[in-house]
Length: 470
Image (cartoon, rainbow, N blue to C red):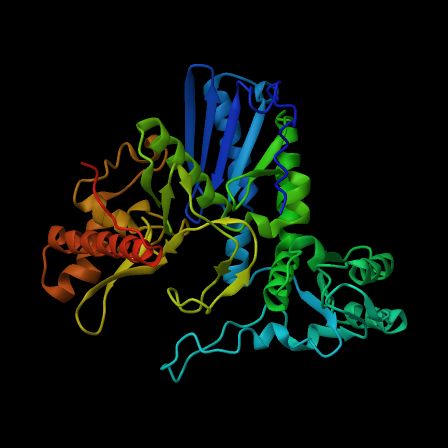
């Protein structure tokens, strides 16, 4: 799959993106929105709480602040690079568009049949991931291509036209079209798009032959549905962000980090938002690769702990491991096959629910358990003073003195040590008859071991041996 990097093919002349002197980097996570402005000879940074209802609000507000601190106007910015977890979160939280799927007649249930195997063989109560498209919106049309792309049955355009009323009645916002063997001959999919697009101009239509032009019917259909599901949301978000940047004078190119570690334009991201799954974490891996190269470490482990999750990637010969398959929203966090498969170029990483906002508790066996649920940015850890009462990793670090409340996030986010101590003591200390410091140390040790264990398992699964540098 091609990467729209915006970089000139003329290798003898540097592209203006490469030579940009003033660059703004933006990353939206589940807890924080981070901005870094790179100027000639210095950098200026800002950390804000993510505004989940309108993620672009924090970005624009942060950009205004950071430009004011740097003493420059928006027109002085040469390039903006943006990473986000918005597409991932929409899939995980099932907050995408109302989506329909049109398939070759007889194949609408392929999305639910999936691999026809049990990912947890001995779990009698195993739950399969629920398809993003409910069965009433999985529609069929008569057509058939052979494996070599030749036409066995022409597309029934009259039957396709009858689906228009169904899509209208169901108030469909997005549509995925996935026909058999369209990866080798997209003609029927393209004709279906033309007919439906003319009748329903506001409908966001995604073709499997554009999103995932590969063999394997289930994965191709699943990827197409995932793209359609998040397309309206991402289109609105990117449109608002671009308009917001324009209002403050930032009119330079805006590039989006993709899951593969490459970048694409807003236009490509708007059309193929599924490529932005794991967009934010991919940026951290690219930084780790650069640091490893500067230090001469050809074997490295990239570790990125945020407010909600921790991401781990192995780097070999100064290059992160790549994959063509990724699962989103796993019903069972570590069970392969329990999520929604997408076939896109992606940096191979393991992501676990262990971050600064991960919540600690005592289970029925009187053990300290941390995560995978997180307090996020609203209400956030108890020490934020925004209404949160559950103890988190950040609260434990404050109690142990590992975080200076006066300097957190550059002093922009105030922390209350008394609220942190109260939360840790109430939920962990008192039930286990521990002092606040001992309970906080328990939270930290558990989350550290959870992350270290995930790194060891990932290394073993990829036939690597973790070894400390000599």
